[in-house]
Length: 167
Image 1: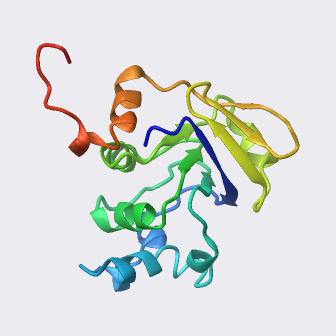
Image 2: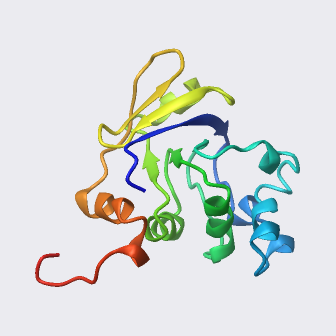
């Protein structure tokens, strides 16, 4: 995941988006197609089919609350989402996303999330921690630490070289 510029459409959600809403239990499977199709199925059964690689989820407070099951993360990854930008994340969800190389950002000023309209084309500059809607406005994101950036650059924790003296 070395791409520092992510471009995609915005999909906007509210506060407390639960992992069972992100990926309902009926779609737990070892079959990737079934897992992929389950993304947001109970929220909107047509949403997954409208997603495109690189799209960006925009959320409120406590994004990813609920269980720590891997299926929610697997479904997000199989659908090739570019990033998630939220007011805040459930801690275990954020860690799981980081470990899997899915970039999660928080707004520097939470109130600006309401300026993003679903379907807007967004450009996220990872290195500048900046989100730019099609209207040309610039939305600052909270800076991400170098350790998290290193994990993202490696495509996730499992893809990183073993830690040693140079780490």
